[in-house]
Amino acid sequence: MVPWTLSGINKVSRFGYKWISEKRLEKYNWPELEKKLKSSSSTELLLDILQKTILHPLCMKYPPSVKYRRCFIAELIKKHESIATEPLDELYDVLGDILNKEESTNCYKSYLLATGDSVTLLETVAIISQGTTGLVTWDAALYLAEWAIENSAIFSNRTILELGSGTGLTGIAICKTCHPKAYVFSDCHHCVLGQLKENIHLNGFVLESETVNHAKQQSQSQRAELTDLQGPKITVAELDWDSVTKEQLSKLQADVVIAADVVYDPEITLSLISVLQQFSTSRTAGKPPEIYIAFTVRNPDTYRLFQTELGKVGLGWQVVPTHTKNLFLSDLQSNITLLKLLV
Image 1 (cartoon, one colour):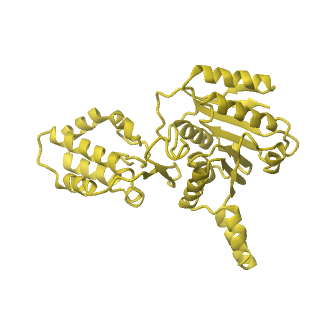
Image 2: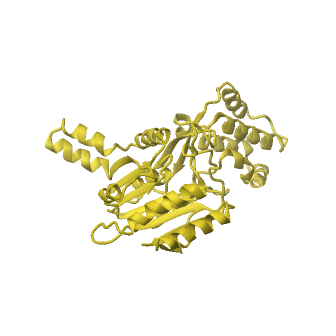
Image 3: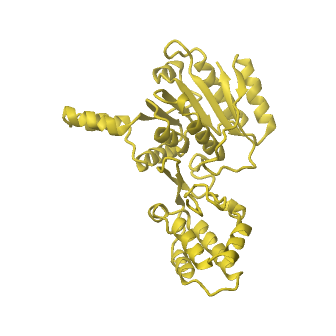
């Protein structure tokens, strides 16, 4: 079992460490590490940590931010020096290599799935970039992905529409683990849509439009093989909540509609309500889609507004129980809620 994890290498370890964003580096279980270093071979343990984090093949191919790697290795060196042992050259070699790297506005974050597969995303380092917050992954997306994986029957062999897909973490995780028939990612910001497509490709998927164009050039047997390998039909749709029509939504034929971290601003919340209302009269196989909305409650007033507006348009809701397995590291202190809408 992997004993340590670094920005992206995201798996529970025997020390209880998981991937943590840069601002949460202090939440690593450093005291437990110090205890282990004092009671075991520190050299062997630290080399193992290096191989499972900074020198992990996934981190080498898709590196986390320079700042995070620098802070992480500096903290390892500090803990190693605290036990008054001989310097470990490998730690300083890694630090030297990182110090020679130039910081970028983009970085990768990778998340290991229970299947052994992974989700790798290209994100911006800044929370707000190019006028949007959609170029980073938020805790509610991690939470929704965990819940979906634990409740995969809801998504299996069904058409899923995700509103406000952002970097694509939730949808890519569902496509890799829940076996949907089709998945529609959606957003409205052109930069987010471009990065979303890049992340879909980065994880080995091909968009349905690309599959169709490629299949025209293939033989019948090659087309069948391509379909088997491709998995769910994946599309990316530009959906502006202020202008999307009921007809456009109906054409997507969604069995399940999901969204993560879209309830955070009163104005955007009202636009979201208007979209959700249209699903109440939209029918796939004679019934409206199931709708699940996950979000961090940052402002109780915004949450109450969301509930009130749902009631005004005749949409009920119920809180979905928390899943049991914490696969990714969302902020455990965040007040994340998952609602199932009663359409």
